[in-house]
Length: 248
Image 1 (tube, one colour):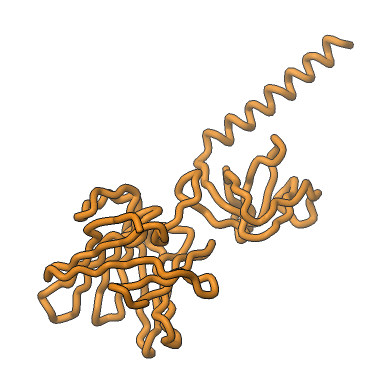
Image 2: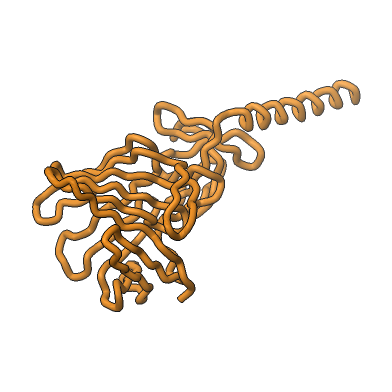
């Protein structure tokens, strides 16, 4: 009898290892829980509730079902949660693309002009940035995207990045003045060199309203490092790139 029990324990142990190994071999995705979510034993709301993951919890997703469930490991067992309650990242570490408030950003354009951005404080969750000593823009980031806003101008909010980031993703960038501009991710994990240095894992976003095209480059933990603007019918491009990052 003891021998049978021992064999059963070994089988259970090996089965557990097999699941972990199979899960590890799958294409992993990393995510953060955006609101408290129930953990289920199967991909169904009628399945037994195993527990609750709190907002802000980081998880590894091993598979996703066509019905909107994400397969995770919960207390060493296979489990499921709603994918719609997750913000996915490209790596195990949650990546931010907003500007570092502890730094001063110096940009230079192709005409030789210099613009300096310095953090000026917060306003209702928005980071305020001085442009050459005058408040010029507000910035905010959440689980759904990165946003900028022109202070005190109605409907001036633009969605610079939409999360999760993936090539081909398209969204409404802004509709300021009734003109709609759309953004599309055209590249990820790019290496881009600017005056301030070489940056890895850069996101490339194309924005157009039909007349003007803007190409923006975002580096993790830094923010925008380069921008190129082309106006239809004009051969001259306007480019701005990060020249230096200083301590405040």
